[in-house]
Image 1 (cartoon, rainbow, N blue to C red):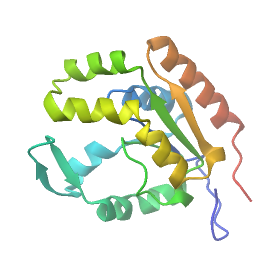
Image 2 (image 1 turned 60 degrees about the vertical axis):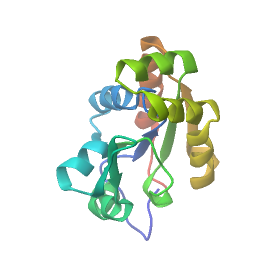
Image 3 (image 1 turned 90 degrees about the vertical axis):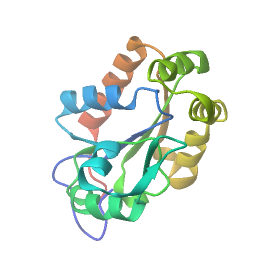
Image 4 (image 1 turned 135 degrees about the vertical axis):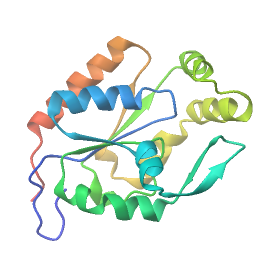
Length: 178
Protein backbone atom coordinates (compact mmCIF):
# COMPACT_ATOMS: atom_id res chain seq x y z
CA UNK A 1 0.00 0.00 0.00
CA UNK A 2 1.21 3.51 -0.69
CA UNK A 3 2.25 5.54 2.31
CA UNK A 4 2.68 9.28 2.90
CA UNK A 5 1.25 10.22 -0.48
CA UNK A 6 3.80 8.21 -2.46
CA UNK A 7 2.50 6.09 -5.31
CA UNK A 8 4.19 2.90 -6.41
CA UNK A 9 4.93 2.88 -10.10
CA UNK A 10 6.26 -0.64 -10.60
CA UNK A 11 3.63 -2.86 -9.04
CA UNK A 12 2.91 -4.58 -5.75
CA UNK A 13 5.40 -5.90 -3.23
CA UNK A 14 4.88 -9.55 -2.31
CA UNK A 15 6.55 -11.45 0.52
CA UNK A 16 6.87 -15.19 -0.09
CA UNK A 17 7.69 -16.90 3.18
CA UNK A 18 7.59 -20.38 4.67
CA UNK A 19 9.75 -22.97 6.31
CA UNK A 20 12.91 -23.83 4.34
CA UNK A 21 12.01 -26.42 1.70
CA UNK A 22 8.45 -25.24 1.07
CA UNK A 23 9.24 -23.91 -2.41
CA UNK A 24 9.77 -20.19 -1.81
CA UNK A 25 12.52 -19.70 -4.37
CA UNK A 26 10.90 -21.95 -6.98
CA UNK A 27 7.57 -20.15 -6.59
CA UNK A 28 9.14 -16.68 -6.44
CA UNK A 29 11.31 -17.30 -9.52
CA UNK A 30 8.35 -18.52 -11.57
CA UNK A 31 6.19 -15.64 -10.34
CA UNK A 32 8.90 -13.09 -11.19
CA UNK A 33 9.17 -14.54 -14.68
CA UNK A 34 5.39 -14.44 -15.18
CA UNK A 35 4.92 -10.90 -13.81
CA UNK A 36 8.25 -9.18 -14.47
CA UNK A 37 8.47 -8.28 -10.77
CA UNK A 38 11.96 -8.13 -9.21
CA UNK A 39 12.85 -11.29 -7.21
CA UNK A 40 14.93 -10.59 -4.08
CA UNK A 41 16.32 -13.65 -2.30
CA UNK A 42 17.18 -12.38 1.17
CA UNK A 43 19.70 -15.15 1.86
CA UNK A 44 21.68 -14.22 -1.27
CA UNK A 45 21.45 -10.50 -0.50
CA UNK A 46 22.79 -11.11 3.02
CA UNK A 47 25.81 -13.00 1.62
CA UNK A 48 26.50 -10.58 -1.27
CA UNK A 49 26.26 -7.39 0.82
CA UNK A 50 27.59 -8.78 4.14
CA UNK A 51 24.34 -7.95 5.93
CA UNK A 52 25.07 -10.37 8.76
CA UNK A 53 26.73 -10.61 12.14
CA UNK A 54 28.71 -13.76 11.44
CA UNK A 55 28.09 -17.47 11.02
CA UNK A 56 26.09 -19.80 13.29
CA UNK A 57 27.95 -23.11 13.31
CA UNK A 58 25.12 -25.00 15.01
CA UNK A 59 22.43 -23.93 12.53
CA UNK A 60 24.88 -23.75 9.62
CA UNK A 61 23.72 -20.31 8.46
CA UNK A 62 24.49 -16.60 8.64
CA UNK A 63 23.12 -14.55 11.53
CA UNK A 64 21.39 -11.87 9.51
CA UNK A 65 21.42 -8.30 10.72
CA UNK A 66 17.77 -7.36 10.26
CA UNK A 67 18.42 -3.61 10.48
CA UNK A 68 21.04 -3.77 7.72
CA UNK A 69 18.70 -5.84 5.53
CA UNK A 70 15.85 -3.35 5.98
CA UNK A 71 18.16 -0.39 5.30
CA UNK A 72 19.41 -2.09 2.12
CA UNK A 73 15.87 -2.77 0.86
CA UNK A 74 14.11 0.47 1.83
CA UNK A 75 14.41 2.31 -1.52
CA UNK A 76 13.59 -0.76 -3.60
CA UNK A 77 10.52 -1.49 -1.53
CA UNK A 78 9.28 2.08 -1.80
CA UNK A 79 9.51 1.81 -5.61
CA UNK A 80 7.39 -1.35 -5.53
CA UNK A 81 7.35 -4.28 -7.93
CA UNK A 82 9.27 -6.72 -5.73
CA UNK A 83 8.97 -10.32 -4.63
CA UNK A 84 10.86 -10.85 -1.38
CA UNK A 85 11.81 -14.47 -0.72
CA UNK A 86 12.72 -15.32 2.89
CA UNK A 87 11.86 -17.84 5.60
CA UNK A 88 11.07 -15.17 8.18
CA UNK A 89 8.71 -12.24 8.03
CA UNK A 90 8.31 -10.47 11.36
CA UNK A 91 11.12 -7.92 11.00
CA UNK A 92 10.08 -6.36 7.70
CA UNK A 93 7.99 -3.16 7.99
CA UNK A 94 4.29 -3.84 7.59
CA UNK A 95 3.95 -0.98 5.08
CA UNK A 96 6.20 -2.73 2.56
CA UNK A 97 3.87 -5.53 1.48
CA UNK A 98 0.62 -5.74 -0.43
CA UNK A 99 0.46 -9.56 -0.18
CA UNK A 100 2.15 -12.00 2.20
CA UNK A 101 2.24 -15.58 0.92
CA UNK A 102 3.00 -18.37 3.40
CA UNK A 103 3.87 -21.60 1.62
CA UNK A 104 3.05 -24.77 3.52
CA UNK A 105 4.21 -28.31 2.81
CA UNK A 106 3.17 -31.69 4.16
CA UNK A 107 5.70 -32.79 6.78
CA UNK A 108 6.66 -36.00 4.96
CA UNK A 109 7.33 -34.09 1.73
CA UNK A 110 9.22 -31.41 3.65
CA UNK A 111 11.33 -33.98 5.52
CA UNK A 112 12.38 -35.54 2.20
CA UNK A 113 13.20 -32.15 0.64
CA UNK A 114 15.28 -31.01 3.60
CA UNK A 115 17.08 -34.36 3.87
CA UNK A 116 18.04 -34.09 0.20
CA UNK A 117 19.49 -30.66 0.98
CA UNK A 118 21.68 -32.21 3.65
CA UNK A 119 19.73 -30.98 6.68
CA UNK A 120 20.35 -33.22 9.70
CA UNK A 121 20.00 -33.14 13.46
CA UNK A 122 18.53 -30.05 15.08
CA UNK A 123 18.47 -28.09 11.82
CA UNK A 124 16.18 -30.73 10.31
CA UNK A 125 14.01 -31.28 13.38
CA UNK A 126 13.64 -27.54 14.11
CA UNK A 127 12.38 -26.85 10.60
CA UNK A 128 9.95 -29.78 10.65
CA UNK A 129 8.60 -28.65 14.02
CA UNK A 130 8.26 -25.10 12.69
CA UNK A 131 6.06 -26.43 9.89
CA UNK A 132 4.04 -28.74 12.16
CA UNK A 133 3.18 -25.86 14.48
CA UNK A 134 2.59 -23.41 11.60
CA UNK A 135 5.02 -20.96 13.16
CA UNK A 136 5.47 -18.87 10.01
CA UNK A 137 1.75 -18.62 9.31
CA UNK A 138 1.19 -17.42 12.86
CA UNK A 139 4.10 -14.99 12.58
CA UNK A 140 2.67 -13.57 9.34
CA UNK A 141 -0.81 -13.17 10.83
CA UNK A 142 0.66 -11.37 13.85
CA UNK A 143 2.87 -9.10 11.72
CA UNK A 144 0.57 -8.08 8.85
CA UNK A 145 -3.11 -7.34 8.30
CA UNK A 146 -4.86 -10.72 7.98
CA UNK A 147 -6.52 -9.70 4.72
CA UNK A 148 -3.15 -9.61 2.92
CA UNK A 149 -1.89 -12.94 4.35
CA UNK A 150 -2.60 -16.05 2.31
CA UNK A 151 -1.48 -19.63 3.06
CA UNK A 152 -0.87 -21.82 0.01
CA UNK A 153 -0.22 -25.56 -0.18
CA UNK A 154 3.13 -26.32 -1.82
CA UNK A 155 3.57 -30.09 -1.92
CA UNK A 156 3.86 -30.73 -5.67
CA UNK A 157 4.84 -29.09 -8.95
CA UNK A 158 1.12 -28.85 -9.68
CA UNK A 159 0.57 -26.93 -6.42
CA UNK A 160 3.39 -24.54 -7.31
CA UNK A 161 2.02 -24.00 -10.83
CA UNK A 162 -1.45 -23.34 -9.43
CA UNK A 163 -0.02 -20.92 -6.84
CA UNK A 164 1.97 -19.03 -9.49
CA UNK A 165 -1.11 -18.77 -11.72
CA UNK A 166 -3.25 -17.51 -8.85
CA UNK A 167 -0.65 -14.97 -7.74
CA UNK A 168 -0.09 -13.84 -11.34
CA UNK A 169 -3.83 -13.17 -11.62
CA UNK A 170 -3.70 -11.23 -8.35
CA UNK A 171 -0.77 -9.11 -9.60
CA UNK A 172 -2.69 -8.41 -12.82
CA UNK A 173 -5.67 -7.09 -10.88
CA UNK A 174 -3.67 -5.18 -8.24
CA UNK A 175 -4.14 -1.43 -7.92
CA UNK A 176 -2.21 0.82 -5.52
CA UNK A 177 -4.10 1.83 -2.39
CA UNK A 178 -5.01 5.48 -2.43
